[in-house]
Every structure is written in C-alpha cells, then in structure tokens.
Amino acid sequence: MATVDVTVRGAGIFGLSVAWACAQRGAKVQVIDPGGVAAGASGGIVGALAPHTPERWNDKKAFQFDSLLRAEPFWRAVEAAAGQPSGYGRTGRLQPVADDRALDLARTRAVEAAALWQGRAQWTVIPAQGDWAPVSPTGWLIHDTLSARVHPLQGCRALALALARAGCPVQRDGEDQGAVIWATGVAGLAALGETAGNGVKGQAALLRFDARHAPQLFADGLHIVPHADGTVAIGSTSERVFDDPTGTDALLDDVLERALTAFPVLRGAPVIQRWAGVRPRAASRAPVLGGWPGRPGHYVANGGFKIGFGMAPRVAEVMADLVLDGRDGIPDGFRPV
Image (cartoon, rainbow, N blue to C red; front, top):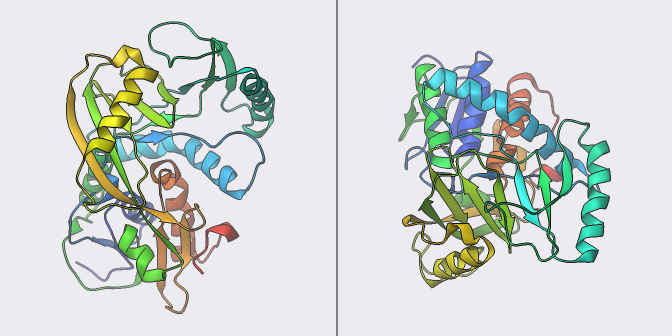
C-alpha cells in the first residue's frame, strides 16, 4: 500500500465510518482490526437509531439530531459504493403513553419538537390502533418520524466492502502510519484510564416476523426493530456485572417474555438468533472524540453505547474534519480527559 495518511484501529461502526469519511475526502486510509469486521458490539442485531426526547436541548441532542438527518444520504452512498444493503430505513417509532401525566408531557414535547426539529421530523400523539403497536394504557401513542433502523452487521459489512472497493480493505494486522484513530470499543476505553468508562453487556434476540415497512416500537425499556430482511430484533439488557461477555441466558428469556407482553403481535414468531456482546459506555454517556491526551498524532473515536449507529455519520464527519483539516467541531463534553 502507498504511504498511508490515516490508520484506523478498530473495524466497528465508528472505525469504519471514520475511515469511509476520510477515504471519501481523498486520504489514503488503512483499517486494522485483529478480529475483523464488526467483531465486537457493532456486530449486533438491534440497530435502533432513536432520538433523544425533544426537550432540554444540549450539545449531545443537537449532535445526534444532525447525525440522524445525515443518516439516509450516508447509508445510501455506502450502499451504492458497496453494491449491497445496509438495512437502513427511516421508518419512525411508536411508544405507548402510560397515564395522563405522561400524555401531557408527550403533548408538550410535540410542541418542543416542532421548534427543535426544525420541521424536518415530527413528534406527535396519535390514537392507538392496529395490531402493530405497543399496548397503551391510555389508548394513545407517541409517533416520531426521526427514528430509523439499520441492521448493524449488514451496515458494517457494507461499509467494509465500500472501503475495500476504494482500495482500503480491513486488515488483521499492520503498522501504524500517519494519524492514528483508535476506535477499539471497550478495550479502548480501558486504555484511556479507569475513569473513562466501562463495558455494559447487552443481550438481544432476532425473530422471524416480516414487518419490514412498519415503524419500530419502544416500551418497557425494549426496542422492537423490524428489519428489511423480514426479521424483528428485540433488545436489550444492560448488564454491569457478568461472567460471560458473549453468552445468552435467562436474562434474555425475561426480555422475550416482557416483549411478548408489551407487543402481543409477536407471539408465535420463532426465535432464530440469540446475541450478546459488550458495548463501550463512556462515563459521560456521550461519544468520546478528539485527540488522545498526551499522545500527539493519536485520536479517539469511542463510547457509542446504544447510540453509536445513530451518531456514526456525524462522528465520521467531525473526526475527518479534525484529522485531515485541523477543524475542530467536536462538542466540549465529548472530548477525552
């Protein structure tokens, strides 16, 4: 390979997305991951790209909003370059409204969304109807049109193929050259120091149920995500203490039971995959982006816990800005310390 401008360590969603953004700008990039593409948490099955609530606006919510709006052109460009699908679709989301207080809050948020979401997406309160809806005690649902889905493993594979066709195949090993971007998940957080964050295990399941054009559902802390391939993902647990990072157990059985109670339409759908993995949760709950303190020429893109796929298009953009052009558009609360 010719002289490399950027080395990306890690072939999960942040590493692949940043590499793609750099390559699109003409940089010579190499991606190195001993485990291969999406070997860690990015190889999951849920893929809910869901926004924060439209209220108490801050840098994190604004960053995520911008990223969700960029997601469709981002993934369509990746699919065109790769010649295969990512599973992306902006299908929206439905949530139940628990009681009168929650109903008042949902309507207040609808007013906030009209301003904060700039008319580019809606948050509305609608009557519950049809089979594809969560059980709602009030008979009302929250419907937002900003939420989207992507199939995590398919998305990462499409990114890796697009990069390979651009002359940047993912490598299992190699030497650092040029600027080095560390997107190494839980191990990378640990390398930043014990206060940087930790790993949180998640367990999820995939059902054979074709609702590919339906919105995703959210209730009782569970994401129900219909994928374009005729499957539905259910997830996930959030486990701080665990012995087996990739094993599924009775905690997933409980998730499935709760899901069938909240979403009776899924009863009888066969479980075709059970998945578990450990996701990097930064102490700030925001992505960790920017220069690695005390290591000139080294950068960090990490901490995508639960929101990594939704944040990836904007993360890729700001990291490419910083590394290639020296332009720093990273929110202060996202920086490594």
